[in-house]
Image (cartoon, rainbow, N blue to C red):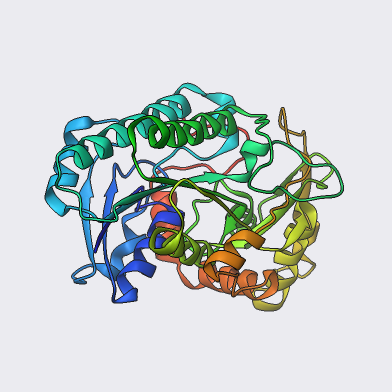
Amino acid sequence: MNILVTGGGGFIGSALCRIIARSGRHRAVNFDLMTYAANPLSNAELDGCDGYSFMRGDVRDAEALARAFDGCRPGGVIHLAAESHVDRSIDGPRAFLDTNIMGTYQLLQSAREYLDSGRAPDGFRLVHVSTDEVFGSLGPEGRFSETAPYDPSSPYSASKAAADHLARAWRRTYGVPTIVTNCSNNYGPRQFPEKLIPLVILNAVEELPLPVYGDGGNVRDWLYVEDHARALLAVLESGAVGESYNIGGGAELANIDVVLAICRLLDARRPRAGGGRHEDLAAFVPDRPGHDRRYAMDSRKITAELGWKPIEDFASGMAKTVDWYLGNPDWCGAVAADSYRRRLGKAKS
């Protein structure tokens, strides 16, 4: 089966393309506009692989989507194309509304037309990938279930919440067979360094400050990206149309504890030239507006129904992540060559 992966050049999308291509069961068709956070090197190892192909296109472009559906006749779609960084959404929300809402609308319309044409294979379905941030902030106890009420705090999470509702509405109104997933914070190799973990790793290597918002006490549930990719494939293959599935890593940690864990790994693997500890580079910075205090996911449904659970715990996943960034300066250099300045709270100028 051909699987159309929107945003397959990004962090999660490229991991998913690699999982699909290596499965031997399906072929990944990467549909991506290749904007700033996408890196061609992320899928370079799949060049020439029978299980992978690339189509450049924008999910807001009806003609490009029609060509993609006509060209690969997918048996399923996994929709990952999105603007995803909360800080950027605060600085410039319009791009998030355009891509996350209107892009999802256009993809759903194109899938609807594909189904109505009779060209879609039997069992076609569309997995819309979303975030735990749509649920807002938790107190010190409890976890988000699939039925948690929506309460987004940022332009990013509001745009994703709107897209979730569109996916459900297009199923109920037009019969597009959609499934919604909501994941916790992803980390792992090949993540663009505006996100906390790669930013801390690369800044530490270069002896730059390690920025931590507020008091560092904001808690996230950390999910290794390849575990997430396996979950998404399981949902496409076996999930029930019309259902939602939470996907969490079962690894709740405060941001400051994540930073300190990275620093300890780097102390062992790449000691500072002048001695001292990497954690001495940590620098608390003013908190961002609307910063949710805690997220935690209840993933029992996907485990019970689809048999998925994470393989990596935080210690093993973080060790793999740090080792990958230390061992892949070419990938990191490609980001630097695009004049990206690593910082929190500001969009790329």
